[in-house]
Image (cartoon, rainbow, N blue to C red):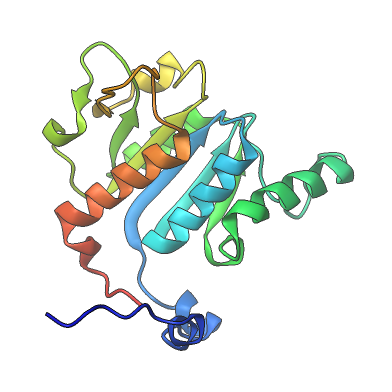
Length: 199
């Protein structure tokens, strides 16, 4: 077997389409909802993941920090700090991810359910299935909640599938962004990349 050669940044960049061509590409039938996620680093990493998965939409809800948007009612200094911290871990992904801020995550979940998505909540909850047993298929809306208190019970009541990632160590759980990445790429595996061509 030939020894793999790492690709240079120039080679990787050369693979990418122009931004307007990228915007016209089909997107994965995958929506992510961050419901009251506190950590701005988590938000930035989920932006980066959504770009890599070419996710349909990212919904930032409740107290979840978000980049500025037209008519943003936040204090400009707070909005600028959120933007700066999110972009630090998102790297260059923010402009390429369709996203919205919504105050009420439950309303978003109900709208996505009405649109035909399977609502999948990642939560350590009674009756939650281990990831390897969960019957995942697209289209799906993946919901992740507050780092300490988890997903609101009202959202859990709308769930089609509750799943959890098995934890074999002493920590109680896995970081929000890591969890999104694990579940997102398990969906990639099960759907053969959502039928999308990688760039």
